[in-house]
Image (cartoon, rainbow, N blue to C red):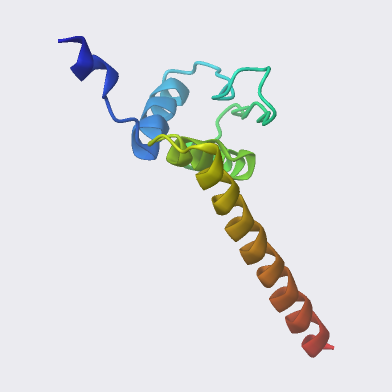
Length: 114
């Protein structure tokens, strides 16, 4: 049944394990954006150069940090279920509100430090 093939769940852990296997095999890789290039949200490619004799743990740690900064996993999380434009607007408003709140809190903390 084709429906079962389409409903395979892609979890962040599966993505990390796949990329870990690529690094272990010595393959270089580039994580491409999820959305097509014509979409308004363009995510940058994630590239991690593994040095000669570098431990795999440190390369994986750098890779995970870069993936988190690029927003690929958040995009995957939001695309797990369909989200219409109204829900997307609401979510972005809440995210902006939380981001502003965190900026205010960090600014207040920094002013209290001096």
